[in-house]
Amino acid sequence: MDTYCDAVEIANRMNQWKLTERDETAEKKLIKETYSTYIADIDLWNECPVKLHAYVSKTKRWSNTRQDYDEYFWVLVSSKKYISEKAAISRYGLRFQIEERFRQLKHGWGLHKFTSPADGLLEGHLAFTALSYSMLQLYLRRNNLQKETHKMINSLRSSEQIGRDAVIIYAENFFGTMDLDYCLLVVAGMEEGPRKKIQSLMQVQIEARRTRENSKKIE
Image (cartoon, rainbow, N blue to C red; front, side, top):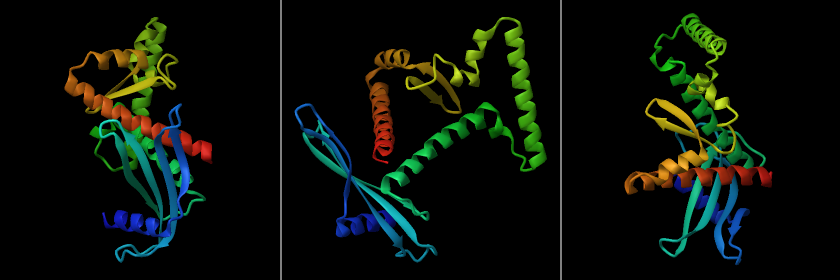
């Protein structure tokens, strides 16, 4: 928390904010506005032996509930120096893609149950899993059961479920995919409590997607 507070305080004192995102209504009413700045070579923290670089964002967003603007800060600290604030945030966005694919690999291939640290055993487990999966796919295709493949991890590559309208649902260590229309139908039929929880999660995903898209536009 000290790192976050120090970075925000320094950014406010420097007052060198750059506009990186702005959303308005058709009537030119401000919906959301984000400014970013960069603080180089920070060495305030004794427990950190290397100099750090902080990328700070300040966002003002309209709240329909409060009928007023909310302001919040977001700080990314790195030992690597990037060419811009947006470049750092865009690189950080890769973390979510890596974590999602790692989770699918870990639980889909059964690696969460494999506890041996030996490289040979791990490689053997992966090879055996890949071989078993390939043999199963060959069996399904040979017996005209291709539709069953959509129940496997390979469904993530299915033309019906991949792309902008793909929805991945997690439940503990399991996941599944569905198209956007069916997902909305399921959410609409939920009780109020679960539906609101899903809505809040979807709002977070929308904000994350907008940040990634705006990062690409600005760069």
